[in-house]
Length: 175
Image 1 (tube, rainbow, N blue to C red):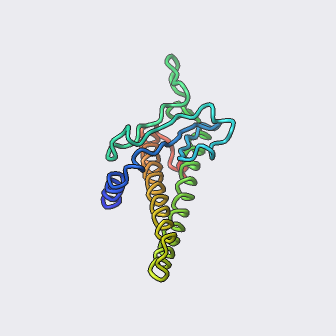
Image 2 (cartoon, one colour):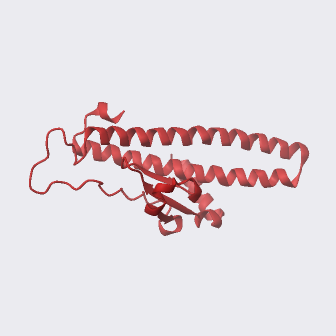
Image 3 (tube, rainbow, N blue to C red):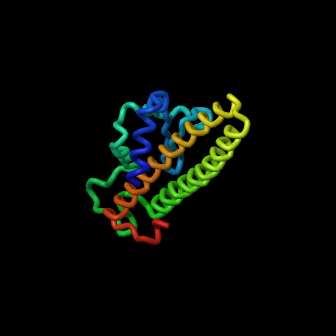
């Protein structure tokens, strides 16, 4: 983990263009927060709710800010036994499932991109074409962005685990 964090910091300082990249955040109708660096991949019905994030605004070593609670906590009546941290069982299950599935998809894509990078490097050694070098640079940039997204999702998942523990959410809801 420390090695990948150091690698990420190195990449952000070595490639200033990456450190200035814009990322977009939006919350869907189920309360799930999504992140992307491609504005066109945001569903049309959520584009009005998009918040633009700049990587340069936050230090690379600082953890991502915790998302604000989606539902207001009751101020007068105590929480119901089935109401953990102001959220329902469906919300907790949905949030964990969404984060884990998005993380798994990114990790799978990351492995495929790394394999593609190895293949591109082999082509570069064999053919020594400029277009192969450009493809390698492009793939390395994609991998770096992917690693950043994975890191953000892991931070969000750890934060959600912490919040669930504080709220007393049963472990079977966290699957």
